[in-house]
Image (cartoon, rainbow, N blue to C red; front, side, top):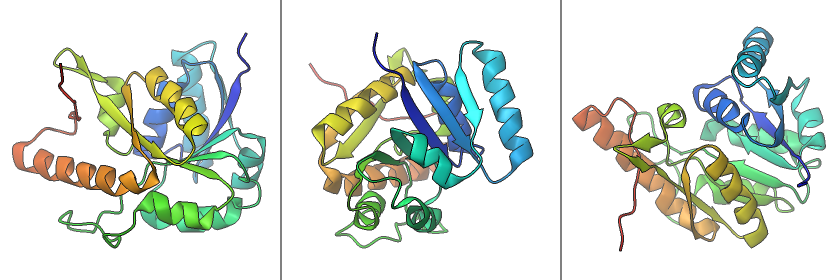
Length: 220
């Protein structure tokens, strides 16, 4: 039997964090959830266990403890919070997979705050040079996790990173969440992926997709 991996989800009580946590709870994972509000965190754990009776999920006391126990760390936080958290977990995240879901959007959603020659994921990799940073879940909305199949087709979820084994591990997680994983390339491809989500948000606002929208590659 495959060894159960432990996933720490930092920012678990946020919109994306709770969607990811609930979605992965049906897989063969041990989930350590960390949020800023303990009452909300306890409620999320209870809700997940109510939905998935066999779920191995618990609230984490602090960032460091959760990351120390984890094989995989998901930073389900906005771009602005990644830097602060990275500093806190730098030592205990050594050689571990760290997933960046952040999109560095500006306040008016008409551009990114990062320079054209970098991305949120690449900036995180600079802060965590001994970790295996992977970009994932940034091209999906929270609503997609409850409905990952739209118009009869599973939503594609793109993955980028510099470590092949790490990307395959994350691909399995993406598939567990109900999406079709596509390994897009190395971490520099995150620049494109973050731009894709900016465009999807802009299109959603223009055409009123109500956040139930996603990307799909059509091919022969």
